[in-house]
Length: 46
Image (cartoon, one colour):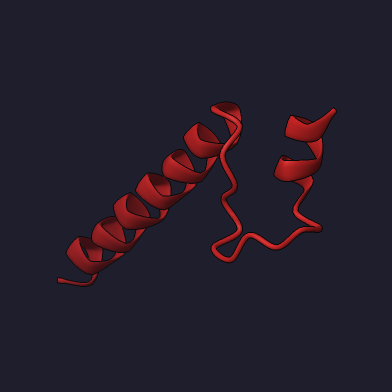
């Protein structure tokens, strides 16, 4: 049973990391609350 829980947690973590990397590569903000100091916004303005 512990193995199933561990695998589930790992799959969720991998999915979240994948989404964040995909957003970053598309130039979107992945910080959750994009402020004016967000590095993604600074890249877009240049």
